[in-house]
Length: 368
Image (cartoon, rainbow, N blue to C red; front, side, top):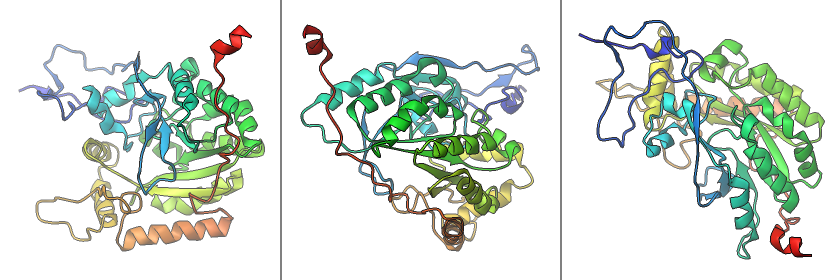
């Protein structure tokens, strides 16, 4: 009988431990070792292709988030965060939500040109654009392609408000553009932080910046006059909730002015990926952590057959959870923010939308 390949021993530096076929595919494939392939580790290389998007702004009507439009320069994310709620989106492309998501990427190289077209429309109404909320706009590929910087240059040109969130220190590269935007209250930056433990962070988010490096970026941005926020996301019951107050304190010391948190979400394929990850990295704690997650989804008793409810996609519930444990996390977070002087309301910062000016027609200017 063929042995299944233990993929976590093969692909170091990656978050997912498997590459299960996407749910939309007609056939399911399972990696196995037939004895002919070497047992030693192999390096999984990152590949990318151009994304031929026709429009660049994604709109939403969700009551759970403080913006109605966003731009994602990349599909897939090399940071490899095992808990990433965006992983299932890769299955729409015929890929796996596992290792494919973090190694087979798509880049919208014409993003700035597409945005220019949309901003020029007479019907366009200015409102803050969230940049990189599905996958990180500053993931490693950005260093080469500079799509995010091109978008920010257009934001500067048109004086358009923008919100960013990242786990990458690469954001410091664009300090000049961010300072320009900040001078007219046109930008806010959230630094996402999950842990202060470099070992845990390297397992959860293998290719993101270390916790200390992210705090240093937060401090650099804050000292440069850019409004900065802590995004404590996700809070994972039983795994990192014990350092909630410490993370808030460190962010406050680094200069953050506000903070928000999100409870772990495990939609669709992410649930099994996270369970597999727990069994590989924390086998002795896995069951306790899963019980804690279920408890935060309002399930205090595990039903017969171990059908634990680990996710709730309903508006008003998916970000915060419910039940006594979820309520306690919420209280602790608010108390920590008050103690260390951070604003805990994620909707409090109103960016300036009055300075917006439509981009000029470059072809007409060339005739002058």
